[in-house]
Image 1 (cartoon, rainbow, N blue to C red):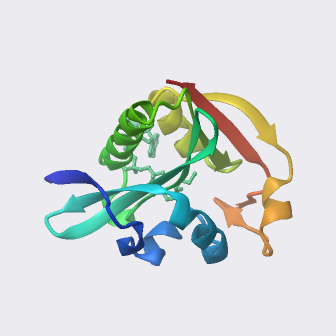
Image 2: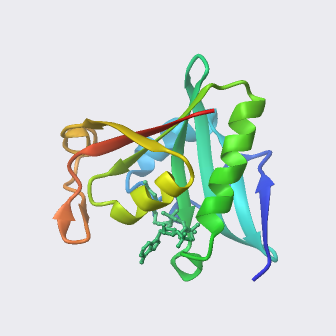
Image 3: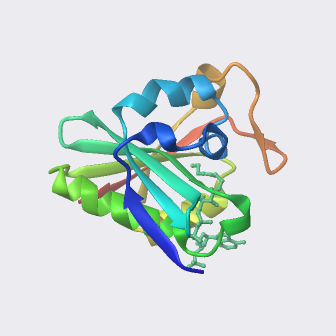
Length: 152
Ligand SMILES: CC(C)(COP(=O)(O)OP(=O)(O)OC[C@H]1O[C@@H](n2cnc3c(N)ncnc32)[C@H](O)[C@@H]1OP(=O)(O)O)[C@@H](O)C(=O)NCCC(=O)NCCS
């Protein structure tokens, strides 16, 4: 599989369905989309993955969304997207890169640690507070957010 990662000039080209694999709230996605730097992974002309990241505080950026089509998961695309995000955050002179994942996201946490992120905290009840509906994943409620960060 030949995958190409491109920085996007227009993040609005990312299909909402793809972004909603990582974030079930279209409303929340529409909040951060206009402020985000975006990358897309393409196989030939088909977008198979995407990453959005934005500046949240001086010298701090956060990966807001990382999504890979189910058919293309576990083939190294997420890792490549994160690699590009790290490069870009450094270019933009950020010192810290953050990413959040829900408590059921054990595989995501493995990937993020392999990419250099460390667990720095837990936002208890974040999902209950910020989402209208109960989020379920792997048969358990996605209730808390695990905060992870990497010093750049
Ligand atoms: C999370 C996600 C972006 C990862 O992208 P990906 O392209 O599948 O990930 P990669 O192939 O680059 O990384 C795979 C890594 O994940 C972990 N992993 C994935 N599946 C695994 C499994 N069944 N067992 C163990 N580890 C696994 C491993 O750490 C693996 O590392 P390795 O390559 O050293 O084996 C993708 O699975 C996805 O879009 N999921 C749905 C949306 C989502 O959950 N987004 C994140 C919200 S926080």
